[in-house]
Image (cartoon, rainbow, N blue to C red):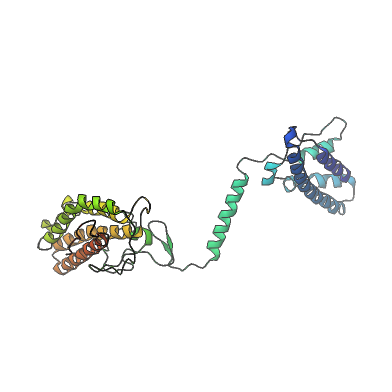
Amino acid sequence: IRRHLQLLLCQIIMANPRNKNATMKSEARRERKMATASVVASLMAVLSSSSSASAFAPSSSSLRTTTTAIDVSSTKLFHWANRFDVRFEEQSSDDESPLLQETAAKHKLQPISEEFTRRSILSIGVIGTTLSTLLSSSLPANADFAPGGTLLDRPVYVTYGNSEASPTRAPNNSNVLFAQDNYYKFGSAAQWIEAGSTEFPKTMPFVPSQQRYDALKKFNGRVQTSKDQIVKIGSVSSGADVPDSDDPAYQLRALGLLANSFLASENTGTTNELMLARWNINEMYLRIGDYRGALQKGDQKDAEACYGYLTKAMNSYLTLINRSISSKVGDQFSYL
């Protein structure tokens, strides 16, 4: 058996590649050397297995039985590098012994599936490294994902960071006008902005003044209508007198369109300041419903609290917008 394996090794080394192209000869030789090295390592393992098996075999017949029973899967070269190997021609002839032909057929380089490419192996490596990093790193027990998919090392809920935020917001942000807002990205409620304050946010995104001028000219009247409607519902005593949050009288979508033109551009994309403005608009939307519901239940105290949060959300929004209104753009909005 050792002799047969040695002959098989000689056959593999002396085999000619199928690709006879002259321009590929050097590359074929290099790849054939790589394949030969792999084959040698595998055959040495077979030889060592045969030697150890012969120590326990009393006769040549039992040795042959033991050798042929070796699991071929341990010697087949199902390796991703074989994709770049040159396949070898079968070297079988009638004068070779059946055992040699069988052994050569078993240890011939096997074709590899197309799914095991170099790119797929690299992807598996990257995924494995990422998973091992996540598993080895210590994450807090209360770590959670924001609705937008951001992994945070803290709990995520609609009133995190601001206890005065509306508790009726859906955890997945599905019941608001603008889904991609501050809560969507950061998994927390934003803080209120004092009317006229410039402390937060620290800076504002750059947007061309012409873009802001055109937007203010287009939406100025609709913003004023929104403000007037909110002031109007603050003096009612019945929930039936409060239009639903989706009513166009509030012009909340117009507030979002104005924010798009003031706090983002083609160069900046969706900014954190725009998401902050959207969060305040969504709070107005939710608080109108909360205020209406409190009036319908006859809870005047809760209704007054909801209306107070509604005006805070509007003033926070107007503060963001006013910071982008310079003398060249137009006149700033007044606060509630």
